[in-house]
Length: 154
Image (tube, rainbow, N blue to C red; front, side):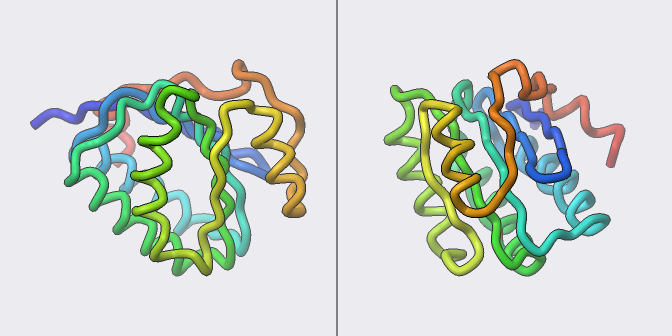
């Protein structure tokens, strides 16, 4: 099956911006997993924060969710703490919250997360945990790229 879904990363010194877009299937999750593992293995951090723009995320298949949970298990071995600010549309925040809470709960000691529909509130939450994230605009996020276009990097 072809990968469905899009994403993009923007790695800054003090934070990472991630965009997840479209409905993800297992193939998309496998590509995302491979790229993120490669990045983490090449530059592990003790503590990291991420703002995840999921406003155009169309959710995921169950197999995709299981693959991302495997990735979270891997990440929990590399990071002392990983702070995730999920930036979601008010209309999908409850469904996203349910899925993401189920996925993250096994990694409570390492993963810290909160949900926002206002970007400034996400940045403030991360900064309240000791990070130095500048005020951001929607245009600061990278444009999502279809997952199959990342295959050349694997």
